[in-house]
Length: 325
Length: 310
Image 1: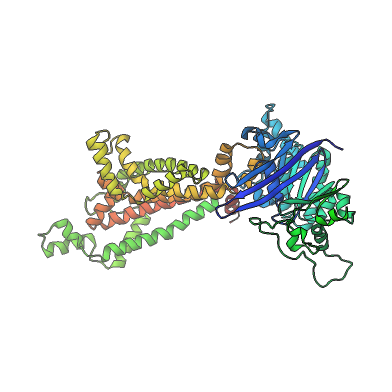
Image 2: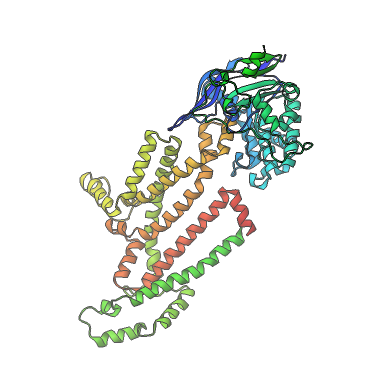
């Protein structure tokens, strides 16, 4: 077992708005070992991005509240750090790649300077300017952008190129943990594969751990060691990539997710989605959160929180499996 | 870029022609007789007719307009009916006062408006935000002439701290500048708050936070530059309108600026002087707007690229 880099224990996040309380993340547990890649999979609104923002303590200040739990990074609780200490961690030890490269870069600053800024903030050794700019050039080349484009502005780049710049900003200080929030969702399919392959290479080269947030199971299969399936703010299934992709035992939601991927070999007139919608996070159902949409729903599911079933690393949170035991 | 600037300057010409035409028409077809103004109430009709002939006022409207334009295009704004002096020289003589007033009040407006606007946005829903918004509302609704008079009462008469009239030193400009700046301050404050609020919710601000950047740098380096574009436009418009619109304040504080010159000229139906002032101020206004557009290009590289392509 690799040493633990990040441990999330019992983390809950609530957004307080004027109208309601939104229970975005509900008591999740997650561990990430050094050099591991974990896929965080789920529909829009499952709480994936909220989890990521909570790790970096970047939740919207007025509305987003972490109500319970711990986030241990190398054994230290990030939730107990001062603002100043957090700034020292962001970008240097934990970095994040955001979903939409079109809006993630400041339109009025050259890409070189945006990468340079990242280096400058964490330049504790007081390296001279020239050296930092040399590193900017290196980083650009690393993500496959010619260094001469350092002085160009974001609007002069394509979407895929912008995401490369965003990635080079995130990797500038060689963080131990990289959180990639749907890094390829906004890109063309042809570019997606390129960017993913590049990220995977860089991660291996720099020995970074990674949390890959996505709703694309294909992306997970390509890149992740372990997978956590999130639904309505909970992790309902967790396991090694093999467990998720090859095992026969799944949470009904995971089964539904796989079932909704169209198969070229089987002729079907209609797509096969999971019926219904994600529950309203302001009023989550009792018992298992998935029961209103579950085809295998039993009486107990409507009233009682499902227990966790374990087999090796594989965890499923569902009543179906507790009965078998 | 220089092609763009040249193009913009050329566009000024039709605008100026239209302005002169409108002013000239209004001055020609509104009641009142210049010759009577000059000669006084007791003038005989013969004398008035004689004078009108000398001044060319008996010629048809289009001939007079064409005459005026021919001279204007040669850089000659004509001679004031009232003083018999060159219109252009009179304007140039008084313009520094107007410019100082506009400049002084814009400095105050920008300093106060930008600062409070940024603070109100960054600390949204706080006491500061409430105070800023309330102040903006108050400033926007205060009438200039009333504020000017009240300030003269308080600072000049009661406290004896500041002069109430004249334009000899910069101290003379303090009260009028404060009086004129209130409207612009309110406009800048409100707009800065709105655009800042919008900007600090952008994804790239979150990116900057994720880098570990400090809040101060995030606001002033990342957000302000992006929020500034619409604010600069308003600053330009406000500055331009102060040049011509400070008429009331100029008369409250007895400042001999272009505004009071224009007002005087309108009363006396001094057509060359009125048209001259209007053309001068309009031209200045257009130059300010051009400067604003050029400034845009230096703030936002996307706009610069567009200029270069056009």
